[in-house]
Length: 213
Image (cartoon, rainbow, N blue to C red; front, side, top):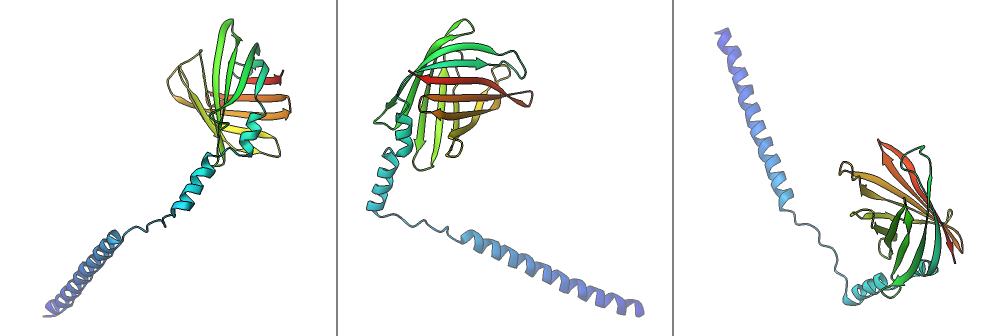
């Protein structure tokens, strides 16, 4: 009889516990359902005048575009490049023709010269996005079939833009980090420093000193 008197309370406890678990599961399910049923908060729509102003501000050239326009003209480029870290530097020269396009909204640069004994041609576009407050640069040339795309912000203290992006390593087809520092040295001098990564190590792969004619 003692044995049965012990078993009965245990069964009662198990029954109560099971009921609690079922209730907890139901409560959790109901809570989850209520969360799922909550509608997302809609963004407050702009009135037509505010929307129009936003688009006008986005499309209107500003101070950064005027700074880009100051570079319009012909530049002699003294190029130094390194194939890998601590490699012997090699030299080349080119000429850059810079102009503003599409109503002063973008800067186009066309490079021509000789590199490693071969004719060299390159083209870059520079944009300043009024909305994101950052610069985007792109570059293509006749020594490859890919495009370098990088973004960065202007630092007033250093008078430079540090661009960061990616480029494809033609040896293995994988993306590798790309970094560039563009410095306004003075009214007629610019310095461009490009950094590539090889075997996990970043190194300066090119430096261009540009002097305006």
